[in-house]
Length: 508
Image (tube, rainbow, N blue to C red; front, side, top):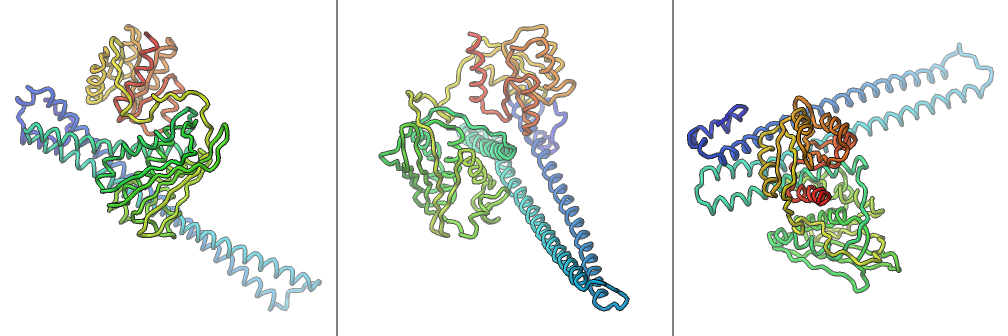
């Protein structure tokens, strides 16, 4: 078994429990160990980035603090000089002013200047306090994110060790289910961070498609059924008789809003009741105005902390994150998404008695026959077989190659591998493919350069950027130089399948 670049801890564990002959005779075990090794290395990389981020925050705060102190000292000196000037004007016999009003006028100017400097000093002090609060909030947020990331990683590492030492097939199946759940938790966390970043940069645009609002809400409640029963909660959904659910809007973003608010209610309610109420406020031939409420009888929120829960990098307090978990981004994302719908989030709550989150939407009604096959949920998407499709996979990471290759082969795709952009370009020039999956960050020649050179000779072949980058600038750059679209790692196989199927149908 190849052991270069192996994590020290994993290498010791492998040597302790497995011999080389056994490993060589089991290719699947080799792939599994390589995947675990990559998880160890990624974990250490994330920890290093986190520590660097903390250090940069501390440096930034110290610089701001030093600058504020310097400015305050300067203002004190100016104030002292102004007071001395006034005193000299009042007591000096040598000063001769022909117009008595001139003395009063000068004193008035000096007094105004002092007041102005005092106000500026207060503003600087307020800025200093805000900077300290912002730095503290960022530190708390990073601490929460570290906890949220490390918790499922701990489960993944621990369960991997258990699987390695357990020969019981039933136990292995159960542990794999927990592994999947931990991986999904990490994926959801990453998506929240990416959504937050995208909304902050104003990169979110709303779709306008017909969908059934009532069906969307019912689908969300069904998808959260396990979480509801885990906390021993009950849920009721009410629509008034006047409500028309066939509307036009963005069902994906709307599902995010409902899912965030409903997940929040479930998380902070135990042995309780959660209600979703949809009430018609006004309806015309073309539009409907309606109110959606998510009501729970959970822990509630103190009136003085209403504003804090909608601030970025903020939760009610550290004990909340410790007891209930979460990144604190859900309500911030919800608030900003509702702004795109020209709506606002409202909250009514009493500590210990629950919360009522609500919003009002004014949406166009769909006048055409609704396509009931549309859904924003993964469970409604069927895997398509892509028999005979020829795909060039340009990827440098061995584990990612193995994973992608096995998934693509399950869909009957003929896969050709290139381990950097240069090899990918050479293979493209000598072979025929239906589509290219292009990683962006690679040695020798990266995906940007390779895609640009392919586009010089072929403007029609679909190129999908398959990348772990979290920077929307880098993803936009990929689209600008020739990629048709991108799939972010870690990718959901069904999402990739749907994108490939779209181009597969074009060639049929």
